Image (cartoon, rainbow, N blue to C red; front, top):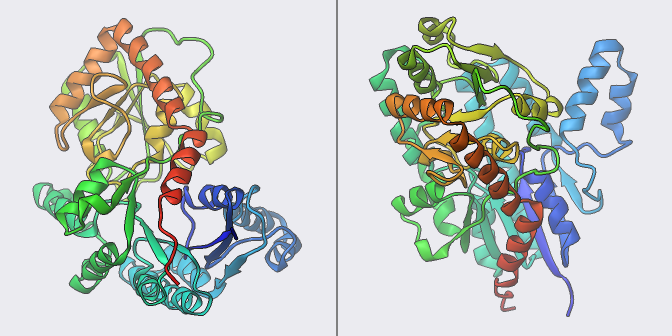
Length: 415
């Protein structure tokens, strides 16, 4: 029996995308990977970067490093670089409104190109991603290609509902841009979710938002993201009991619920719990002023340095409002950190076992759970061990087995 032909297409780069492509290439598929920009070793972009002077060279090489993966074979990669270069440039220089418009333009243009390839080549399986696959999924219907939509985050309509409510509750966030909130864009995302033969989601939270917006739950597959248990490991030696170091990693802004962590530490009024925030500050900085002196902030940490950041903490707090499944929570679990998360974080952590799952917008409960971990070293140690065990149960090998089983269950196109 000949290899099944699989096309995976994404216009950008996400933390899951490249490892997923590498994994698919190792399976029994003839894989084509279509994307906007991918830096092949020794290509024109690398030669240009090497010719640049000093700091420009270092910056260009770092950017190119973000757009390649050592385990991806370069054969079968198709790129369309111009739209992505325009979008990246706009994201750093243009207004949020213009950046959102260019993102939609990039995604729509890329989607049309992928759809044309599906009609020409008629692959057996297509894997697309939310926000950039409507025309491709329509082409799959026409050609009999089996289609999978990887839904990386909760449904757009559900997320906007939560974030618009947050802006009403907290006037300091009234100015925060929510990106493209047009009904046309929301409906486009809804049509994608309904067109795919199956929707792959990383968490129960994402699945629930898809069902709330019309997707048949029997056609949704839960596939939690793989946890990197090799790079992220617990500290070799236990830290002194006090102070308890609570860590947050991610964009420091409205959507991630950082305000509720800072409100929690404000409620606690104790000096034996310290909070560290790692990540870029978004949504302005005025809203942080009431909490000055209550946290330590580290910005722009290279990903290579993050394992040491996690190992230097005792617990991880992530009271987010809207996610898919935050990779930082997985990295915390792999580092042996008990976590305090909301259901909307999409974490594999279970309440009372690897940490605590608390309601969104509930600073008092966050404060209570932090205090319990600070005051009960036996509980902290038990949840730390459970966190690492949970991460190991969701490592790359487990993800590979689960993905392979999912793909094996797919029907072959009737042609």
